Image (cartoon, rainbow, N blue to C red; front, side):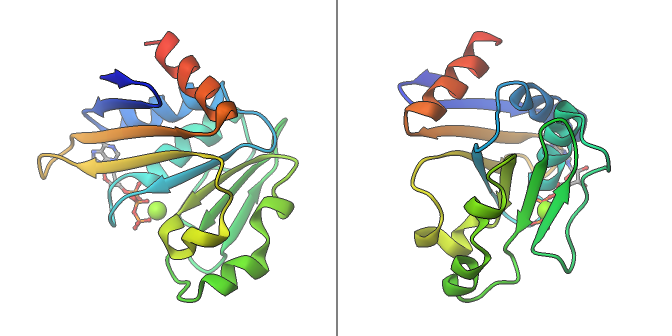
Length: 158
Ligand SMILES: Nc1ncnc2c1ncn2[C@@H]1O[C@H](COP(=O)(O)OP(=O)(O)OP(=O)(O)O)[C@@H](O)[C@H]1O
Ligand SMILES: [Mg+2]
């Protein structure tokens, strides 16, 4: 369903969530920020893997276990942050994610750990398990005109 600034897509497998990430990647450009929200195991890293594939970055995207920010080199680099282990929003401020990732696309898992310190303009992708099995409801919300264009692109391509 589509309303002004929001799109909901249901995926039926991890492969389809990766395909959605690949499709999203084609619409992203350096400086873009995508916040990936969802419970443990929702599929945030799975979607990030699709974005990495779509951007044709060198190494496969995995869950960053000890690093807070992984950089994947490529034509457009992919920066993948996982803030799960952070408890103080100030720690995120010190990471200065936006500055570190300025030349690439930034994906942030567990952005709620740092709500106030992340840029207000971003694409929010919220993933929910809907059936306790392989279906996921993926809600994409555009915050800011740049991300409205990304959302329009996702809409245009079905
Ligand atoms: N439709 C689907 N979309 C995404 N993942 C799915 C789907 N169906 C099943 N899965 C499975 O759910 C798991 C999602 O794990 P993933 O690491 O992507 O979650 P996460 O949101 O990054 O979790 P964490 O908060 O621990 O980082 C994988 O094992 C994946 O195969
Ligand atoms: Mg993850």
